[in-house]
Image 1 (tube, each protein chain N blue to C red):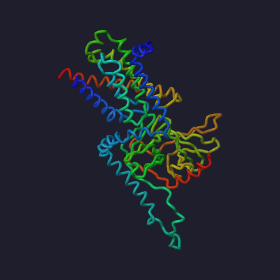
Image 2 (cartoon, chains in turn red, green; image 1 turned 180 degrees about the vertical axis):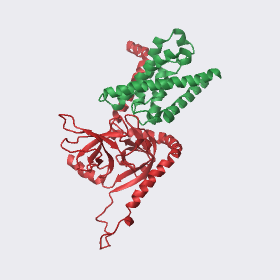
Image 3 (cartoon, helix red, strand yellow; image 1 turned 30 degrees about the horizontal axis):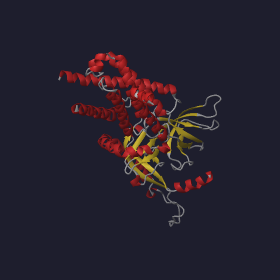
Image 4 (tube, one colour; image 1 turned 90 degrees about the vertical axis):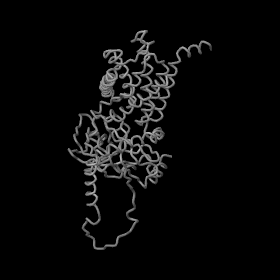
Length: 275
Length: 172
């Protein structure tokens, strides 16, 4: 016993180091997968107010570009207004809510912190639990898919960016509906890779990639990107596809969070299958 | 004593602000992510006790983790670096250095000594950090490449920063 105490006393620095290192690894192990990122809940409250101050200053430099993109979006939305359609039907009374029930709602948010150069990138936005945001909601920009809500505090949320090792988005080709998963390989924030597309599927350059109808996170058919290059190695069953992303992550400033109002219903139904 | 603690606290905040506001926004390429906040640990006095350095490393890592929403990555990397710093310094400095008020910086130990010291410790730090970040050895070669490049850029930034600030202090 005396020897043990002497031993610990002699190498006490090592024991302090060892305890702290074990603590770090336990934290890493517990919170690594993105379903278990409640760790971030403890810290976002403090750090995001810092990032908000920074972002408020930086946003002045982006005003012109933001204005341009909002104008483009306005024009697009205006063209989708009912008044810009030519009415082709003869019967005009068709107000019946049972046919069209709203499934998706969009909450606008601005980006207060963002990175694109790390292997695992995260985005912080200025909307949170008080605005009805919950983990695992989709996030899009005006041009394409951005990521998935990871954790929320009262007024802020962190987003698992598409530019992250843990982010996998179910996608398909607009042309023929072939499915695949979209992942980022960590090289260039402009490009991602589409995996698991069978070799029998015909591909062409610039084919649009959209979100699939298999996920409860994104509505079907949101734009993601287009095929930049594709190749098929001999003996390989799947295409190697490089996708050019529509979203410009390095200038991201306004995003929309998607609430799926039917998500709980679908998940309850699906969870009964597992039992 | 209080003054010394205060000056280190101030230096910590300045280095952290530079890391968060400037260095994190440098977008050279996705294989270059310099982490200059490690300079705070590198530039602690040589005679500082090992357990103090380890605890300070742990706290530094914790603050960085909070600001980059990573669980424990910076703690693990910085803590290991702080621990190994003691052994490196014991081997690479003289008895006089260890007892006097010497800081392992360029102005006191020379640029070659500092570059070697910085490279070894920064390399260990970045190695642990980047491999924990991808959580596996799946992209071994590309991650190792990122480690080497980022280490060199971090070292370059820290050396430049010292040459700027310490010379001003000497002349003024």
